[in-house]
Image (cartoon, rainbow, N blue to C red; front, side, top):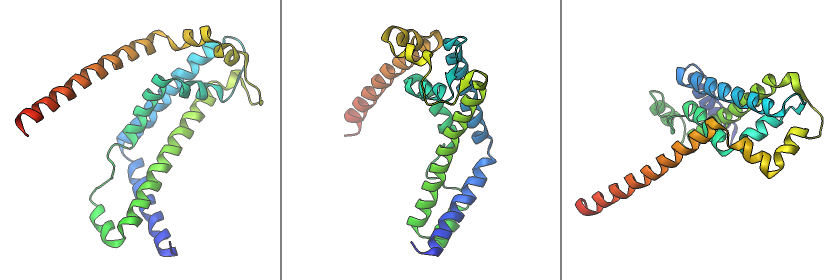
Amino acid sequence: MNNSKVHMVFYLWKRQFIESLLKKQTICGYLLGGVLMMVFSVQYLNYAGNRSIQCLEPMIVTMINPIASLLLFIGLILILPDPPFVNNRSAMMFYRSTRKTWMCGMLCYMASHIILYYAFLLTVSMVFTMSHSYTGNIWSRALIRMVSVEKWQRYLNMDCLFRINQFLNIFRRRGLQFLYTFYWFYAEFCL
């Protein structure tokens, strides 16, 4: 890429990023992720009890849990709701740049939001557990205890997450039934 294309990619990224930061939906996505991360961090802190924990452990444990990761991903979906981000300026941007340049600008925009979102989640988890955490290169006793199968199952089978998992299982079953029914109707009446 020559210098003018790099400048155009940076310009596209900057304009899209500034415009998206002012949207209510983006602010709600960051707030939702921050509140959920706060809840999961405090929950891990309660699991650890009075013991100190390593400052990165709440984020690591939350990202290992598939249900918690899915709930945090909802905040990211609120931040990036409508790819390919076609808006009023898009026609003019297509005219001023090439398709590859526009696509590189939008990929940089998405990557920057994803990195910023997860850095924000890490910051929230570190801030809310700061009074009981340390920065040493050693895992805490709570995490070592959690690695054992019995304790891990007790942590993962918390009441709230268990109910959400049951709801998602019902949704998956109903969603598959809907897809099969839709496919049957399509095959019967459209083919």
